[in-house]
Amino acid sequence: MKKNVCVYCGSRESNNPRFPELAQQAGREIARRNWGVVYGGGKVGMMGKLADAALESGGDVFGVIPTKLKKLEVAHTELTDLHETQDMHTRKALMESLSDAFLILPGGFGTLDEFFEILTWRQLGIHDKPIYLLNAEGYFDGLVKFTENSIQYDFVRKSSLKLFKVCNEIDSCIEMLERFFEED
Image (spheres, rainbow, N blue to C red):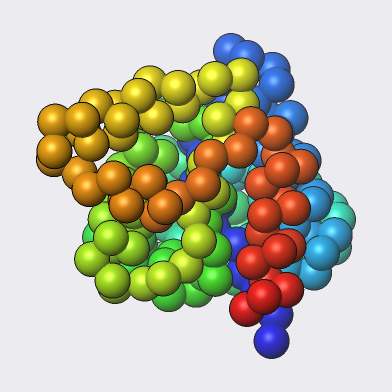
């Protein structure tokens, strides 16, 4: 059965040109392995770069976008499938149900919201799908430090560090995904 990787990333491009390039590379590499991309459904920013690269590489891309964001994030109309939802909660639940694994690229508050929700769901046993955090150029160093602080102050169990894996290069994340899908 074909696997789908949910990619969370920014609806903006960033002032660091490397980040949109990483989104494109992720889209190409996922498509090259015949995995589908599940993402937020936008045509702009890193989301658009991800989707376009996957489509140009012959991949399947499934977007999930709330009605309210269709104009703001400019819904991508050339996808394999575009699901429209009533709200963000439904969006995140549908993205989870369509996906076999999660890859988090640099992004803003929306990306962090998606990461923390999917991480919490894994912690609660709602799913047992792997989560890979791409810490390119140390972008998520503060998030990793926050997690360590949460453990130090006993708000989070040390075993929770096993709920997600940190990789510093997209190739490392893709290799981890390959290993997971081979074992699955």
